[in-house]
Length: 198
Image (tube, rainbow, N blue to C red; front, side):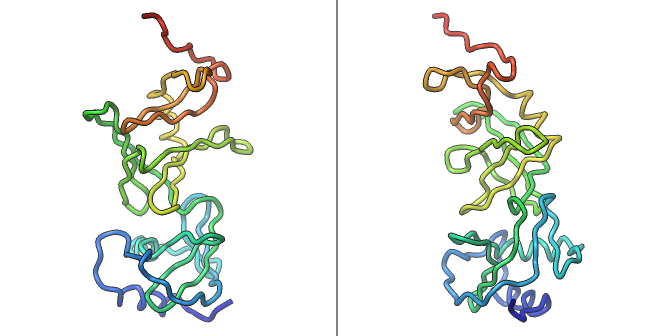
């Protein structure tokens, strides 16, 4: 466990300059300095030394230097890289916007740190089976960082669902940005098969 404290890390982040949203962490390759006692809970809340970080401005600041390396989540500045714990994924999608573009329906999601992500080929969605809560939807935010779509938005997603045939199987899912993201086989959820009539 490294001795980096919250004040020191905050100062290091602020010294990277003013950036709108995520900083260019993919360009930084400082040495790994060990893990710090910071955790992102499954509900998207951030904790330092077992205590919640209540200031949303501070959470956004740390989220802007979050990166997914091969085997861990890290906070990165130009001079150091420290590991943190993430219970599920780092972000939670808390708002959804539905629009129509040239390619059809477009779903955009706002995360708990106010980043907007438009689901599509570059930002896919995935659906996993939860231990007790049924399907858990996720949307890719950036560079291996995902947001779990909250339960209220999951029901909105289901209302937008449709059935398409994928590799000969009728699948229920949602379309966005010209892509179709399958949730589950249609027969498992009682959805009508796609209309294949000419």
